[in-house]
Length: 239
Image (cartoon, one colour):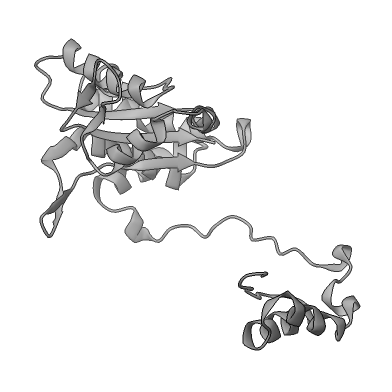
C-alpha cells in the first residue's frame, strides 16, 4: 500500500485526499477512486505560486543558557569575535566536559552519566560560518587551565574504529602517569567521517556509539584484540 500519510499545510483538496485515505480507504484501489473524484488543479498547485516561508535565524537562547563560568566566558569573548554565541558556548561545554573527566557525573538509578558530549556545528563554509572561529576561541582556554591539554587530550584524522582505539591506547602509553583519561575528537570536516563510515566493514560508527554510552571500547574480531576502558570521549565537528 501507500503507507501512512501526514498532511501538514497542504493545499485544499490534497488535505482532503489524505484525511479520506486515513479514515476510510483501504489499499491502492480505494485511494485511486478518491483521487479520481477530485480536481487535480487543487491538489497540485503551480509550484511557482507556492510561497516558501523563510524561517530565518533561530531566536537567541534565553539568559538561562549562559549560566555560570560558561556564560561568563561567552559574555567576555563574544564582543571580540565574529563567532556565534551558541557555538562559543557549545565548544566551551564540550571542552569542560573533557577536562572534568569521570570525576563529574550525574546518577540516574544505578547508571552514571559522565560529561560526554558530541557537538556538530552546521554553517556556511568560509567567512559566513565562523565555525572554526568558535572552536579556536574556546579550546585554547583549556590549555591555560591544564597545560598540554591539546597535545595530550585531543585526537583528529580518524579513519576507523580500530584506529581510534589504537590512538587512545597510544595516549595511555605516552602518558603513563596521566590521571585524566578523557579525550576530545576534533574534526573540521564532518563529511570526511561520514565517508569513512560508509566503507564496508568500517567499525567507526559502532565505536562512537559505545563511546557516547561510556562503554568499554574494543574490537575483538582480529588476532590482536584492541581494548580500552574507563575513557571519556567527546566530539566536536564542523559541516
